[in-house]
Image (cartoon, rainbow, N blue to C red; front, side, top):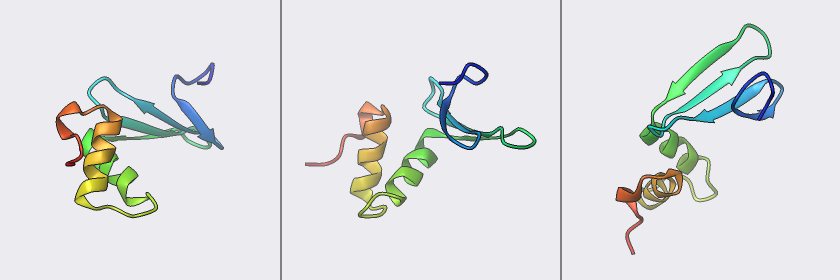
Length: 76
């Protein structure tokens, strides 16, 4: 967390901040400040797609569950 920005600073002015509704805002403060808000299901899809196994129904549900969506527990 930065003093000037409430989100997680990844590097080079890139910040990530989770909202209570599960959406994630990505902000680039490196040049002209730019923000992108991604809803929870899209964020889970992004996380699943960059995982080692790629996005499948199982990795997507796992990313949703990890992100805090208790209704999307991975199937046994």
